[in-house]
Image (cartoon, rainbow, N blue to C red; front, side, top):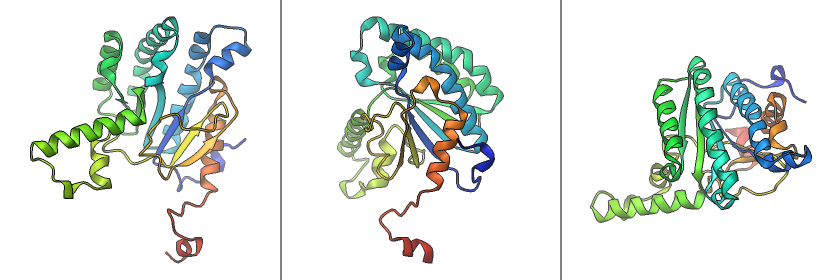
Length: 248
């Protein structure tokens, strides 16, 4: 496993996204209920946030709850919402102490009122944080993001605020939930699944994918370092040849 000292501090991705997968399978292996896996995942979240901030990552986006997750058993969804409220309340002082700003993307209005209130309070309290922005993707899906962006662009076009000739990649980016953030350079997915699960579909166009078989509750700082080191070994060409990169 990689250590922090082995990381090139001059080649840190500005934005890392994480699909935190495997909580249910982890709990099943331990003979517990699925919510036990979600509760046990808090340590993995805490260590990932700490290691990202220590390395100088500017944006860390965690796929905490997808729109598809609403289809899970009602008792599990309600337990997850309660856990979300508790965790935000518990971790906000640590975010403040470390100058980490909290943001949220997704259909936030679909969350229970208690979750919306806790989120809003934490976002307000941490808004002055400058070290890193922690983004929680809640009730989020990439298709929803593209759909709402198209709807807003259509509304602006109908109102005369946007011309068809003005629509380009940069314009679309300004209407996405991640407006103002750089696209992720690295996506980490745990549990070994080989898909992006409707997450940041536009934004992941040139993102490096790092997939580990490790289940999310077992993810620790050294595993985050492994992912960063794997990213640093890759050559990001964006359609160019290796020779072109060498010349430039």
